[in-house]
Image (cartoon, rainbow, N blue to C red; front, side, top):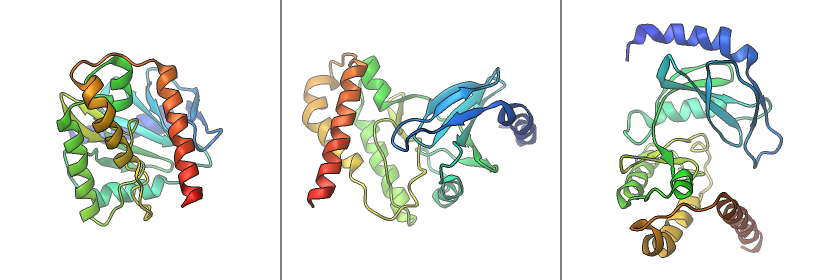
Length: 219
């Protein structure tokens, strides 16, 4: 990476991307909507609060921008500062008014692996566990770690969304995912994976959300 190019990249963001990039968040539990994105920027993904894009001239960096009215931008920048350098996490190179410049992590989310039939390795699971231990040792609380926020590349695991690690309440989503991985995925799909249909994955996601809501109300 040539540090001299970062100011050029920031100028490209400020003058070419942000004025024409329109984001909308309708519901906090559903992905944000990209209403307009100027060429040649490309959309990489949308979360419930923010979207991530890449420019072909800067393939190793991405821009994560929060939708209007959605909080967490400043907290996420601070989480990256506290995490420091770890191979399973990205790093924050710049924090703008409502966006972050992050080092790009390549690969597929575990959600995408299920859709395409790519085997999720035991090493990926172990890498995510180790990264969460690293974060905990730095006073953070790994939060909202699930199949859409975790990536696999060449059999190794990465956590790509740490925006909620500043929260203090415990989160069981990764432990719940690992139970499903051990009980169902390993015996049925890991060694002989098949693509799973989107309707099935979305149905499982909604059922899990209802189950978690019911569990909170009955505890």
